[in-house]
Length: 173
Image (tube, rainbow, N blue to C red):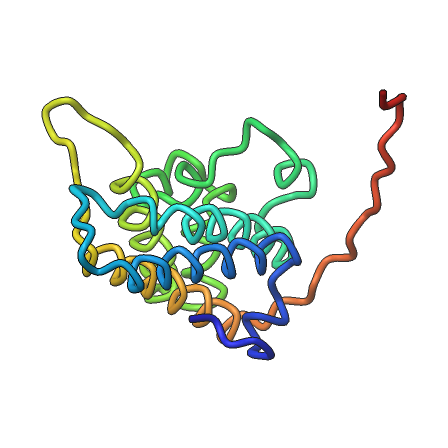
């Protein structure tokens, strides 16, 4: 799925790589049990959607689109800063606008559509519209996430931000 040694693989953090491996194992497990029919294959997308969220936060931090404080915040919302509908309201805080201006509108569109298709539409539950994914749909979304991350790294060539080591304090029993 994501080739070890690729520019994308090199850019991803250890945690992100583990999510990619976990996701690949889930897809392979599904292929090893083709006779089990499920009503929804959204679970296959989850590790990749989580990976994508972490990837985007790190990418935006490394490209100085968001601050270290926003990166670390539990209140920062990627979907908000990525939305093309909020460019005017967010002004210089719009990640969508920053990507479009600094790199390309097509990259900004791809990052947004992948967020929308690969996360929002997969994991939200609405009683009037329970969206279930077929196996093929799940695989297409996974591919979209990987392609978008690859294109983002290829086009932006981010410089990895130094990792701050945080030592846990307190006692463990």
